[in-house]
Amino acid sequence: MSCALGFDVGSRIIGVAVGNTITSSARAVATAQVRDGNIEWHVIDTLQKTWLPDTFVVGLPLTLDGAEQPASRGARRFATQLHERYGVPVVLVDERHSSQEAARRFAHARSVGLKRRRHADDIDAEAAAVILEHWLLEPPVAATAEPR
Image (cartoon, rainbow, N blue to C red):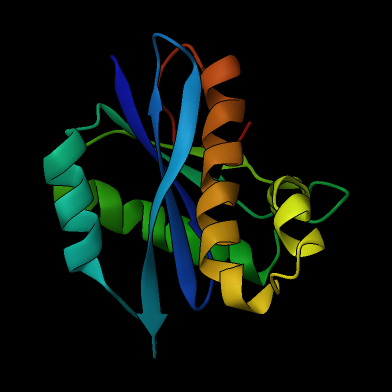
């Protein structure tokens, strides 16, 4: 395995990152819009064809105490759709604090006058990179649909 795509699933935007399992590094690459529950699959199709990932890593939003929440169902549904669409193994990873880490990485940009709203897409893609980096640093023995 050498390439993985990571996803931060939101109700309006899905952030996407690409990662390398050899270097354990990840970077934000794109976002796909979600409108009325419809995902811009053409964006994800293009990324899948470009990177040919061995694994998809989907952030699973949990409460601070580790329980599932309404957003967890959306992430699980998206993970199932990814697997059905591409036949690639999907791993769900606890994404607690990934958005805060992504926002922290953008702190400098905001300090020079850039607004969070204007860069929400960038922050979501960066959150996907944080999720993917977490998995790359501690990958499971085998791909699984259960969160770590």
